[in-house]
Image 1 (tube, helix red, strand yellow):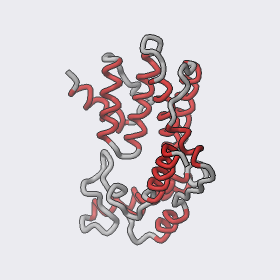
Image 2: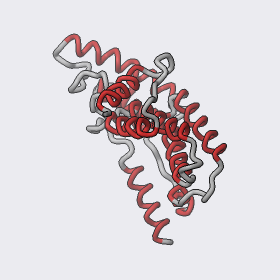
Image 3: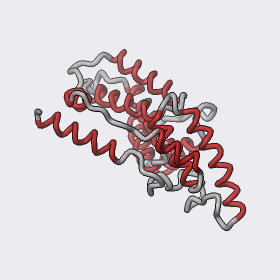
Length: 226
């Protein structure tokens, strides 16, 4: 097995092994707008306990709806439900039912995503990929959207700076920031917005179509940007 393919195979297996912890620290970390530390349904504070119950019920509903479309995202939501309601048999069963499994037939297939893209990717393909990523995010398939956005970044990096449209780079960063907020990774979202603002300092987000949590992170980055 070629060394590069071997490293790719090891990476995939390591990621799969750690993809579905039960009540892991990262799964139970507060998301933007949540109580901190994250309460559960047995919290001694009635307000926090009630909040956890409502959020757990919402999360179970969302996890169930995601199972057919995006098992990875569904698994993340089931883990979140288990954080909010540690005694939930439904949440624990959901975590196990959607636990990612990896079947590797050819290491070369895994390594293909790590290879450099074509020397001259067409800008039309980049725009089409951004459209696909946006559709995936509207369907709450954030894991698939992030995979598509990683491919877009590789393609954009292979385009001559002078010919790469600024709008595509800004759109990529905004979509990535939105996906990071969905995963509760505010620091990564801030970095994406910082890159977007370096390309377009006059960038504004549409308040009608942008989730409030995403706007809150963006506004914080804008205020901190000289």
